[in-house]
Length: 285
Image (cartoon, rainbow, N blue to C red; front, side):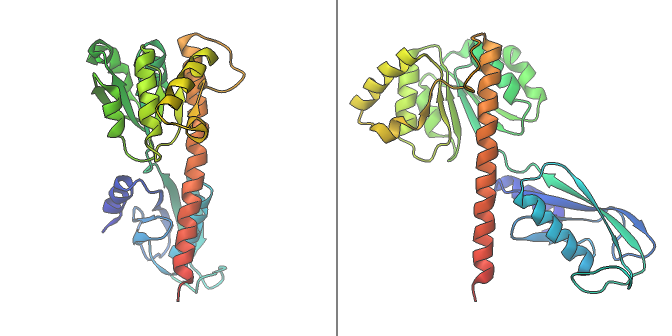
């Protein structure tokens, strides 16, 4: 596949990658300005010229992937006999500047259950991030196009779910989804907690509420068969510790910050696993 198909492939499979573009050429070079290729942890597509040029680009791109880099970089290489070449000689006589851009092809799934005052404020913040953002509410009035219009201008892919039984939508979320439970009804919250704990493949499970609410929920969830290890999977109250404000906007900022911490940690762990898997394959005879 070509570089453009590769970007789509990485997006469809939620895999990280780096797009490498020949940004400038001076003198003779194997490819013209504008040539592109894509690197993932264990594969590459298309070409920016082969040889030392491309091998150096691959080395730098994968170093960027290893540290979850988000900032583009420029890499300038001279293609002469006098240049330092770690991957073989390339003496075309010119100079090439490469632009290496980390791709935002990994989109975590985040589901907000309850799009009331806090849920809407949280959705406004998260809609600015490269997420698949699921908004779920049993009340159709909370999900009108007019009310949610500001959410569609950001980087998130927003999916709306009017669900009279919200836990049914929870069953349809992809593995690894992060679930934030803040509905208007404690009965809905409890049902969602029960359903979320029956899915071991979910990410963060956050529940809004007081310590008194959580004490009551623990009793209900234990009666449903959940043990201490299960209950420990629920983060409550959600939000960064130390932020005591109770206005919807303050709670939303706190919860969004906590979620971003989790997303960054998950991204680093996933990339490390991909790198380990690739290295294992490389070592096999």
